[in-house]
Length: 151
Image (cartoon, rainbow, N blue to C red; front, side, top):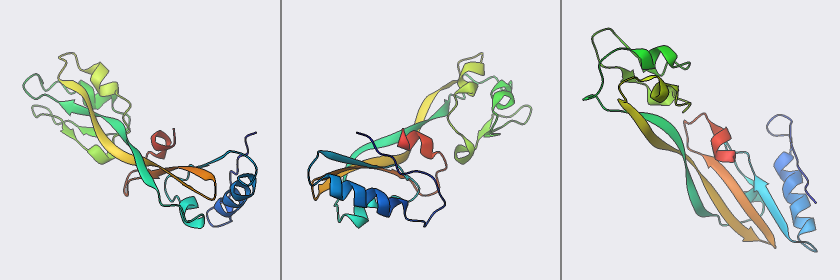
C-alpha cells in the first residue's frame, strides 16, 4: 500500500498528517516515510528521529577549459537561464547560481572546451524511530532546484 499526502500551502499540516499516519501504520506494518519537502523537511522533528546522512546530491554544471575555448560565445547563446555571460573577445563568465544543469552549453561547444562538472545541491538522510523508517531530502540553503534532490 502507498499513501501520499500532497498539496496545500505551507503550514496546513501535511507533515503532521503524514507522520501521524506513518506512526499508526508502523504499529503493524513495515513503514517507510518519505519527507520530500526538500526546502523545509521536518518529519524527523515530529518523530524525534536522529537523521544520518545517506548521500550527497549533485547537479551538473559546466566546467570550462579556457585553453580550448576560442571565445565564440555559442555556449552563452544556448543557455536558457542566462547563466553564461559572453562579451565578444572575452572568455565566457559563468554564473553558477543561475545554472539549472541542463548541459546545453556542453553540447553546443564546437571546441569541447566545456566538460561536465558538478556542485552539491543537497543531501539525502535516513533514520528510524517508533518503527518508522524515514528517508528525507534536504536542499542546501540558497539552492533552487529541489527536483533533483527529491528524485
